[in-house]
Image 1 (spheres, rainbow, N blue to C red):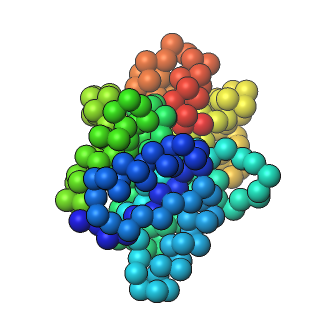
Image 2 (tube, helix red, strand yellow; image 1 turned 30 degrees about the vertical axis):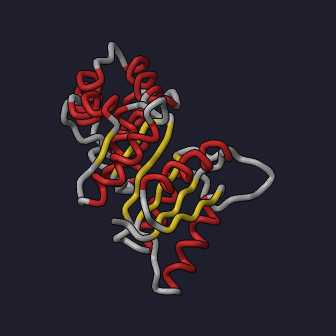
Length: 221
């Protein structure tokens, strides 16, 4: 089983609940922080001592307060921790339940488990820890079908840029001109039209405005 676990959660009651639950269920060293920057400091210190954390459990969203932070979200924290120590397993724990956004977290930054906050959170976190320890991926049951049932289509940076341009009110010919000027390819009007049509079909959007709204709701832009 894991030896050292780091918890990053900014709400005291939730933080305490996770720690209490894990102490009852597992026999590993637990540290907890309220800020992502503090988590990074602990990870660096542990590496210097040659006693790295095996597992990071992090919330996705951290509320801003009086303190200025360099890292302000769980996905950013996961990304930095994996740069510092790639073997670290990461479980994200959040109220976020949009399937496509969550699916992306497994690709980038590359988390290993995702638990939705809810009535069964304590049981699910325990199960997620056991699953991830066996080098398997864990996903809350409430999301498992939604994500696995999502049609397969790679949404890349080009697609996000394309939809962002639409969101900014640009017409397709204007987007084509901008892409050509910036060296973004494919930049032809026909290529942009074809890609947008595929995206509309994929997201079941009636038109470009509807596409933008759907993608915003999914948290992709």
